[in-house]
Image 1 (cartoon, rainbow, N blue to C red):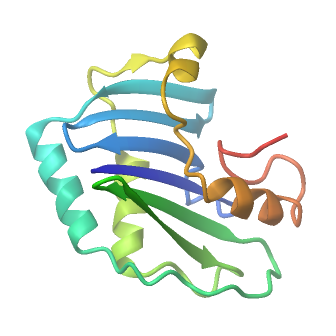
Image 2: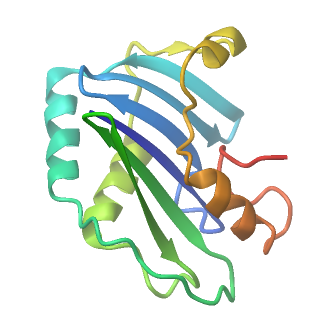
Length: 160
C-alpha cells in the first residue's frame, strides 16, 4: 500500500505539505517551513508506522463535496494505492467554517507534528527518479483553488 497526501490552503494552522508513505515505513515529504521548503526522505519507526496505519484505518473516506469559496479554503487530497488500484479522496473546508472530519484532522495534525528523525534531504535527481510526492488528484484540484487566492497560497504540489 502507498498513501500520497497533499495539504494546502489559506489557514496558517494547516501546514502546506506533500508526502508519499509506503507500507514499509519509507517516506518522502516536502513541506513549507518558516525557512523555506524542506524535502526529506527516511523511514518511520515501528511505533510511527503503527500509529499512521491506525489513523488510516479510522479515516472517514467520504470525500467532502464542493462548495463556494468565500474567505480562502483548505484542502486535503489523499491518493491510496492498493493492489495496483488507485483511489483518490478530497476533503475541502471552503470557508474555515466547515472543518475536515476529525479522522482527517488527526492525519493533518500528525503530519504537522511529524519530526523526521534520521531523515535525509532529497536531491533533485532523487526526486526525478521516483514517483511524484504529489497525488495525481492534486494536480487538478489545487491549481483551481489556488487561482481563487493570491499568489503563494496552496500546497507544495502547485503547478506553474
